Length: 473
Image 1: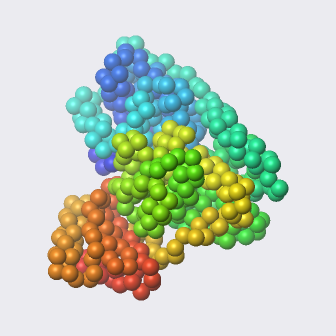
Image 2: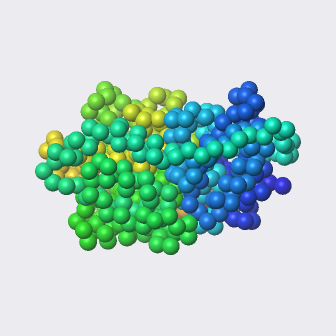
Image 3: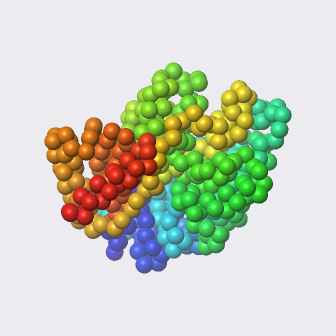
C-alpha cells in the first residue's frame, strides 16, 4: 500500500521509515516507469536519477532502481547531487525522464521525490496520478528489465558553469581587490559543487559546513529561517567577507546575507536580478509570488520591467514562467528561476553566481562599493515574516474564502480604507499604506499570513484586523 498523504502538490514527501521507505519508493518508481513508457511510447526509456545526502537516500535509491528497471526503464545513476543538477541532466543528457530523491529542506528523518518527464516537472494532478495508477495496476514487472549505468553529472555541471561565466571570471581577475564569499552548504548536496564553482571563478571562498552529513548537525538546512543563518552572519562579521550565500538541503533554494549581516530576502533578490537583466533586455517580464513586497512590484514598474504576481509554489511559478515567456521568476522562499541565459528551473547555485555577477558588474560600473549598496535606493518598508499556524486540512480553504467575503463587504462599505483585494492565491488585501495576506498552504494543514506597510503602526493594525476577523471565524 502507498500512504496517500505523501503525494503533495509539488512533490512526494514523507517520514522515514513510516510513510516513505525503500519499498514505497520502489512502488512509486515502478508506476512512474510505466507512465514514462506510456507518454514517450518507448519500450526502454532512459531515466536519470539523483539523490541527496540524507541517511536514507542510498537505500531508497535501491528501491527506485528496482522499481524503474522492473518496469523496463534504463537508469542512469547520477549519485549524490543537488536537485538542480538532476534537472540539468534533463537538458545535458536528454533522457526521457528524471527523478530526484530528496527531503529538500525538511528535517533529517524526511525523504521524498521530485520527478518529471522530458523537461517538464510533475506537480498537482500528475503527482496524484501515481497514487491512482498504483491503486489501479499494482506493481508490474517486464520480462526485459532495464539496464543500470552511472554518470558524473556534477563534473559536467561545474564545467558548464565555469564556461558559461567565463566573462565574469575575467572581470573578477581584473578587479583591484579580491572578492570573498562565505558559502554555507548546511552539510547538504551543495557542499562540493558550489565552492568549486566559486573558486573556479577566482573568488576567495570561506567554506562553512561544506561536508556531506545527512544528520545536518550544525543547523537545519533551510536558509529562509533567519536563525539558520546565524553561523553565516558570525563568519561575515569575523572575516569581513563581501557576502554569504546559504543553500537548503537539496540546493534549489538560496539565502543571501550582506556584509552588514542583513538578510536579502527572496523578493529583494528578484529585484537585484531583474535590474541586472534589464541592462541587456528591453522590458523584461518578472514573476513573483503573492508573499512578495509591494516595493518589488513598484520598483519593477519604475525600471520598466513588467511584474506579474502569481501563486506560491515552485512548480506553479515554473509553469507560469513557461506560459508567459518571462525572463525571471522567484518566490519569497528562495526558489529563483532564470529563463534568461538559463533553463528556467530553480537552481540556488546558479542563482548565487548570478548574484555575484550582479555585484561585480555594479562594482565595475562604480555604482556600489559593497553588497548592501545594491538596495540602498529601495524605499524602506516594515513587514512581518511568514506567520504560520495550524489549521485542519478540510477547513483551511473554507476559512480563506470566508475571510475574503468579509473583506469584500468592508471594501463595498468603504471601511478600513481598502483599495483592492487580490485573490490570485488566498486573499491579499491592499490598504492605504500597505497590505495583508492570508493563504492556505498547498503542502501542509497550515494557514499563512504576512503583512507589510510604510510604517510599523499601520503594519500592526492590519495584522490586528486580520487576527480579530480570524478569531471570530
